[in-house]
Length: 213
Image (cartoon, rainbow, N blue to C red; front, side, top):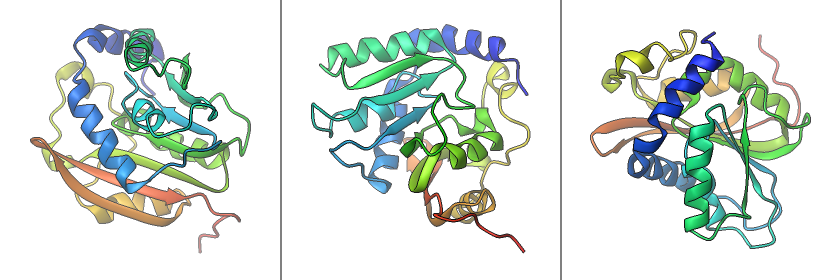
């Protein structure tokens, strides 16, 4: 597993020049696949970066809705996300936390929805297992991964990519990743976001454990 302090430093250094436009587009595409309610759903944006998914969800929720939990290892990214929220008048809609995304700082079955945009390839499959723990039965998850054929990270970030999570080549690969982790009702598709291809996946945490034969 990548040293957390090293990963935090790498993303701290990136925070001021983060490609918010790209990540906002990815988050919007993912949330179109997984619409959120305007009510009291308990939601987490995992490895949130500068908060693309949390901010997109917060815009659609009622002012009195439960704040969205946004967690990232990088204090720089959290600071950037908090500043964006203030500019948008959403400072009270999101609970920003600096800390590891795995395990999530929530009780077992404590969430209705988990969203992870543009980050699962840094967390690895252990995140999928933790999401099964953190979601209530019937809770939903939505995540993205870069498509393997077009993924060209810089040297620093190539070293941070989880070695134990194969990147999808197709939507079926992304679907298989979710079903192998025990999720059901999986919807997966590959889209182009600018010049990059992204696999979007939405799935359900089953009400009873999935039996693998």
